[in-house]
Each structure stands twice: as C-alpha cells, then as structure tokens.
Amino acid sequence: MVEHQLCTFFINDIYFGIDVQQIQEVIRAQEMTRVPLAPPDICGLINLRGQIVTTIDLRQRLEMSELPKSSSVADDQLVLNIVIRHQDEVVSLLVDSVDDVREVQPKDFEPPPVTLKGRMRQLLSGAYKLDRGLLLVLDVEKILTVKDQK
Image (cartoon, rainbow, N blue to C red):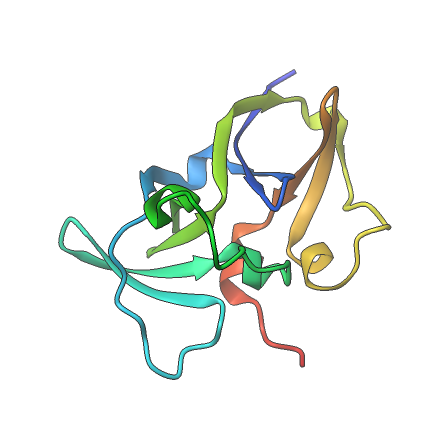
C-alpha cells in the first residue's frame, strides 16, 4: 500500500499535518508588514526572495488561544512559517513548531473526531491515530478559503 507523507507541526501542543506535496519550504519568522484593516488571522505580508506572501496565523484561523504576550524567548523563535503552494497561490502559515515528515497509511485515515467543534473541525480533512496520539490533517484549500461565520 502506498504511504502518504505529511509535514507535521504543533500549534498549542496539538499535532497537525499538511500533505508534504503542498509544502514549498519551512522558514524562521520573517520581518512582516502589517496590513491595515485585515482580518485578525492575517498577520501581514512577508518578502520571500522578492515574492510578496500573505501570512496567516493558523492559531487564530483555527480559533485557538493566542500566544502569551510575555516570553523570555525571542519573537523570531516563537513561530515558524510553513510556506505552502496551492494552485497558483503561495501563502505562509504561522505555527508554533515543526516536527518531521511522517509517513502514514491511507487505511489509517479517519474523519475528523466528533469531539472537535467549530472552525477547527471545519478545516480538517481527517485524522490518523498514532502511537503518540492523534495527527490532525488540515485541508489547505479550506484553510485558504475559510469564511468568517460570526
């Protein structure tokens, strides 16, 4: 059976993954230009080797708690950018930390857990049960096309 590869990362100590074929690169936090009047989950724009890329705060997009404002760790160490390519669009997703590329079996894929509610459940394509817990798989298309339902 063909294995599926996921780039895995953490947000708020929750284990997530995105299809590795949609990942362009992973980079440290970059200098960001804020966009006036942008929704709160749009952090701003970064310059990625001459290409202007929108940065989405996945923590906010998934309606999770914000990072603590005070920290002894430098700001550039708090988050990483996972740069994704979807169709003709390049977008950066801010995450807490990046783990590894995991190989998973399609037969182990399940629908999103019924215990998840709200925006997070809407943006998942499913989950894998692993020895270390659940690996929640984000649907990149849904992340990029989410509509504010409030």
